[in-house]
Length: 151
Image 1 (spheres, helix red, strand yellow):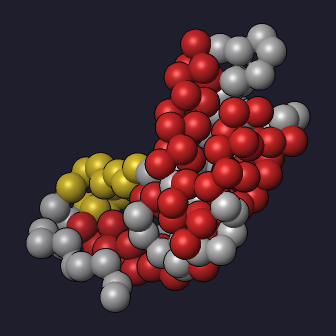
Image 2 (cartoon, helix red, strand yellow):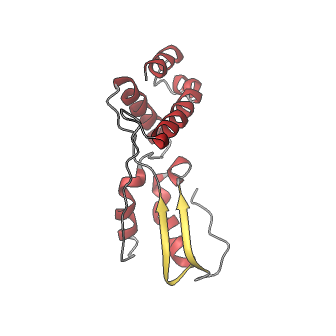
């Protein structure tokens, strides 16, 4: 089901922002989201989309966890990592003056404070997925827990 239409008149805002939508919105709905953001932004207004890329790591366990997570999300029509494609999606919507800012957060050596916090959040998310991964047939709880411990 497509995302609902915003309950605002055309041109209602100077700034329209969406953050971390890949966590809950199927990738096929991005064109509709961007069109609706454009509709409620005033002419010459500002539209911002913030999202994440896929975790990359030298840890084989964390890489395997991430690949399994991507497979689970893909089966549900989601793409965690849409951040790398936002500029392309925005351009397809016909918007101009697109600016992209990519931020890399280090969780490896030497880790940044933000990187340590993001890694802890990510691992907590992955831990909660253990029963779902097993039901989806992607990883047994034993395998999933082992990967989490190694990661």
